[in-house]
Length: 238
Image (tube, rainbow, N blue to C red; front, side, top):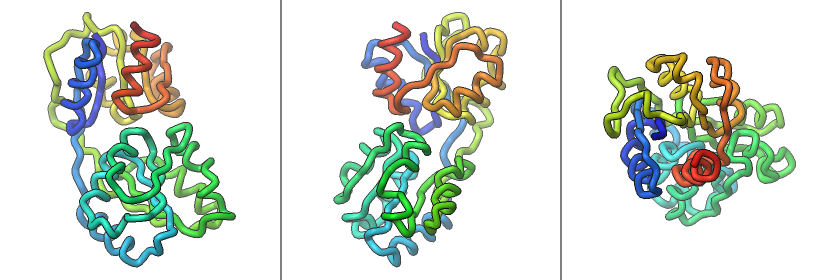
């Protein structure tokens, strides 16, 4: 059985995806998503005034949902950088160009020619509160004007929510797609047992944070979507 940590809104979808893929898994949510209306309102006003050639960087499915809830003309025909396959799929209904960086990380975003100083004057970043600032910091250092909107925040749950009953003795691998969720799970786990298990995450940065906890076996998937994680598990853990 695999143990996967996801935010509450993704719990059921991830559990269903792994079951349909023939994998036994338990999904645990240690945090929920709370949308930040003042930042959403500010983003709406910014997009009304921003010229259509200004790229939008959308860092997650939750950030994508905010865009989808805005009037279609605010994002139609814009150049959107979607960090991850799941984010791109969420935005697929938009009448616009969507680019997925490779790798699907901040570093991949920054390597895109469209975000070079020669081709870009300003960028709008749509993200969650408390996330990395590497994209904004690097773009600013290139002389590009950056407007970042933290349209949601992760709120830690008083009690974790689980997709089904499970026991640590049955876990043969742990999947954590962010440093925050890995840390929250670690705090609630029997740490010696968790440290002895193999872990899977989605970037070398998060992998380093997990290794710092004392875990020796940490691998990195090519993406954070259920499809990417399932593909990796079937190839390397099954």
